[in-house]
Length: 263
Image 1: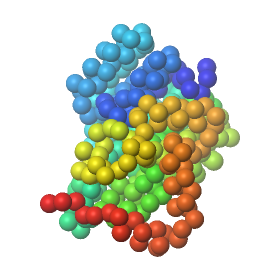
Image 2: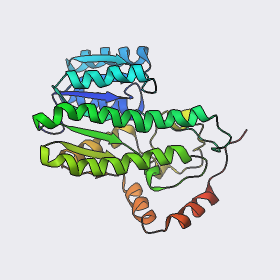
Image 3: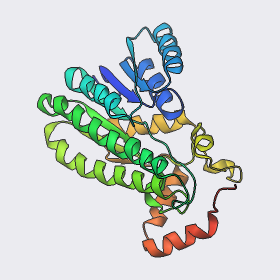
Image 4: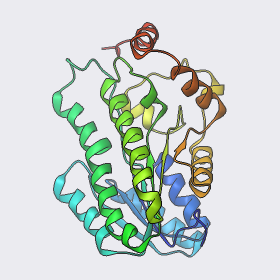
């Protein structure tokens, strides 16, 4: 079984965007799936399509990962089913706004979903993967991880955590036969921008990728044993350039181009 074709994969945030593309691609490659998201209708529709199209077993697990009791159910599935040999931690979101003016619960919700849930699910997955010396974790971060971004501060900070955590975790797990790869997509044509209230209308076409392109590069990097994947040449160049600048200068430059959301 190749690294790109797990026996049973769990994909969070699978109802749309990059998560949905992961589910479609993995099922097409012969994997059974557990798809996780809040929207039951979308999950059931996706599951039915994949069962008919690929003849795979597709289990639906409806959960809001910001809610501790529902997150616990997803964790328990990971601990109870040792067949799961790939966890795609894709669920996450951002909210545009001035930190001091946003309701605190909306900011903390991003931390709960993007950081706490990802960390807890990674721990649960490793409870079976490490003893069996197989499988792996794909954590989806963002190029925002490299950019302290005014008016998107919480999201960027959570994704910075995902990168740092994942790189360190990869070093810990590789001797035990478990692969950890963190993916940092840039602008991707999904529902993310609308949900984040982020106006991306002025962004040129060349900066955008499709969710399918992101998934293709992500799975190739995972199969190759890479710890960090930045899909898209334009995003790799940006990440390299930002790494050369002091953070204080970088945030000042970004601040010149970012604007508070319109009221």
